[in-house]
Length: 274
Image (cartoon, rainbow, N blue to C red; front, side):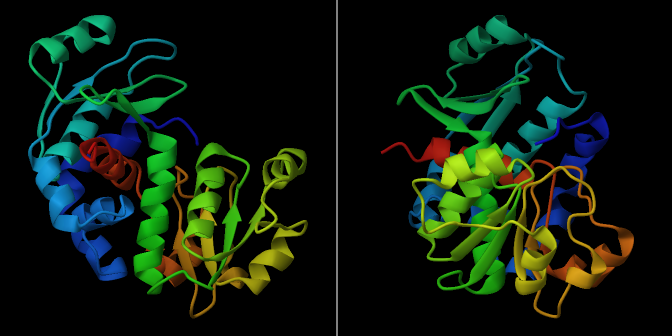
């Protein structure tokens, strides 16, 4: 997935309530419910576990550095879900130490390579790429009324989010197909997964499908001619690369955000340690 920018995250905390209302309209589930459902455990138990978590979000300056507003956005999502959260005053190693000294259960942190939640007591690492895929598949399942036996096309299946989405969709009983510009990598990944069909012609594949999981950073994957009355799209890739006409045609049947579902699902996963 592409690196986020300050513009992607700066207003997330202020928009959470409106975002959640739109999510309920499109999927029938709130952000809390999608996060909890993604764990496969009873919702109330997961939400109770989240509300008991103390969480630190640590700025990491390695590599290309901290994205402006990122830690505040992550903390805002975590707090919205009911956990006790704070951003550490220190960064990097000193920030982790600060969190431990303040008795946290979970540490969230991200560098150029990974965005993780570290559950301290269980020594459990929850990865954003896996959580984002699982959370969006859960949202797509809710929006579609169930994925068992449904045909789903994953665009960008050779990427980290796309590949995890393929595995999660297969677990849901979906009939999964995928396309990626890196066909060699795609065929390597699917060599031991005959249940995943690799498409050679993206245009033809999109004409045959109504349900899409778009994990590709490429522009204009889904064009107006691919939008049908029953089209549903889960699009975790940032930025969202639908043209204006395609977006207007499918906006009420589209799930997309910069951080919300991924962070919420990470928190749910880090809260389920027993």
